[in-house]
Image (cartoon, helix red, strand yellow):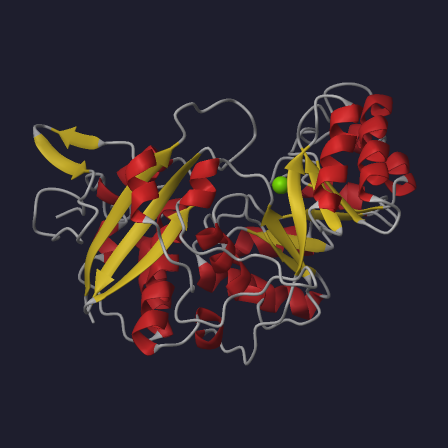
Length: 405
Ligand SMILES: [Mg+2]
């Protein structure tokens, strides 16, 4: 098979706010090769990610992502790794390339799996897809009472684990934050798994983060996620040495395998959280999962968007029976739910698993794409580099729209 077309669909809610909710827009990727179609999703700014695929070459290692993808052979998993290596090298000065290629890479796995009639996790070498315990991923409320209600609602929906993130944490006093931690614990119940994500709010201020540790421990939080800027490894390492029973978690900001490995080796995280829509796709995430196993660190997916992204993010650790925790987007915006016709609902025992179906096992809903589609055209010197492709058929790469020609 040759990769014939790569089409991007920019979806957005009618109103996008400053809320730290990544499901307000989406960039869907459709790849066509050999009569098959694969779908992927970038977890990134849609417009800049499209631009990274079609932009004019600046120099030899600042080429658009399309230069390494279109026309390439796709027969084996090794072909995906080869294309990924070409993107990494030939687009090394194009910093959005990893985000853009993440969605393309997912779509390549989906397509290869469908062509072979195999789930992606089997193509990755796993013999089984083990069930995971999903945690409801929600934002802290504006008040402790709101946090309490959100925690109760998550529990009422059957989630035994809940992650509370962002919101007011770190913006007031340690005491203010403690009220939220204890409200979340109260709402989840004494046996619930409590996870806390503070969204890099402490920059690299180790003392400010450490001031929250006693209350996190008292509330029996399993992990403290992203206390610092994603590359503040000294701060991570310093806090990890003081964090006691509360382990550090991080990794969603990793744009490549090296960043994730450094967070394990120098940042001292106990949980490495990888978003396949950012790190370059499923292949690099699988490398991180293998590395984590060797280091005694637990791999966790990072997913705050659709069930297409959720399926993709489960694949890299589907076969790791002991790595059980799974981020489950519990309250995404409607577009993230509607864009797929199939969903990964928890089973009777509340567990989810990567589907035993060809590719990623998720169907796209074209009506939802139409409903949320943002029409885009990128023109340079009178030449149209990109315009929203037709939904009903892959664009032809030589045509002056959709894929970069
Ligand atoms: Mg997070």
